[in-house]
Amino acid sequence: MKTVFIVNPKAGKKNNIESLTERIKAAAEKLEADVEIYKTKAVGDATVFVREFCEKHGKARFVACGGDGTLGEVVNGAVLFDGAEVGVMPFGTGNDFVKNFDGNFSDIESQITSESEKCDIIRYTTKTAEGERVGYCANMFNIGFDCNVVDAMENIKKKTVFSGPLAYFLGIFTTLVKKKGANLEIELDGKAVHNGKLLLTSIANGCFCGGGVKSNPLASVHDGLMNVNIINDVSRLKFITLLPYYMKGTHLQLKGIEKIISNVGCKKIVVRPIDGEMRLCTDGEITSAGETKFEILHDAFSFVIPKKKQSISV
Image (cartoon, rainbow, N blue to C red):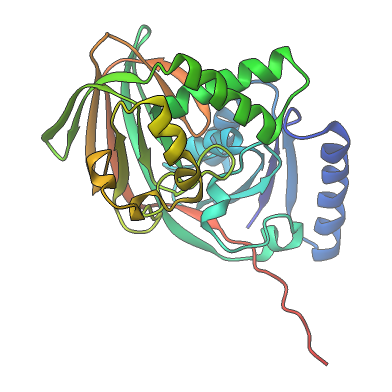
């Protein structure tokens, strides 16, 4: 099978990306593997490239070298094609999807030679000012506080020297001061479960968001369900108290937490912004959206799990 490394030049440091391409070439030569390197040119370019490659050549393995956004683009290009496999070499700031697996994702040879396994994916249909848009999400959607944090974090990274976890924590502080949340109608499997203001909701295939926040600890990429958090519009003080547990993924174990957080699994979801529009964070990428429908697709794409090299005992 041909392996195509989709490299996002804007992910990570320039020197690391240049080193990566040299290491890919060396690994391909050592393994005598059929390998190609493609560097993306703009937002959305990876989706177009992967789709056109599949239409022309069929079976191939595509390794997204970047963050969750790059993975999302590659998945959206590959998901409808039998024989297309997707891998990840994490070079972004979040890299949350790979945290659901036990694999050596930095090993180039393993990316080329390891087996893939079937994973679920979320298909969403959303109404925008330009019309209806259909897409696919590998990891998680965030609406409300979590999405506002990402918005604030990106603004901080653009205007200051801060990046990584520090930018994320500053994003939390900035968002906590404003505490916007969201105003939504939510249906789970055809049943209305919420109408009004809330702090946030996360619609998850995987457990992690925000660079390692275990917001949905019961989520699984294999169970054929989306895991949904709906967190009520609590006070700032209450939120600060809950935040450490939320980040570690132990919040659902707290006594009386069901009065604050609803956590359920479902196959279909409809979210309607009462104010006409909402900010929707899809695998770390934020857009404005209207009514949005979500549906889990079980075992819908093949994901490469790079094997860890076995240590040899003497």
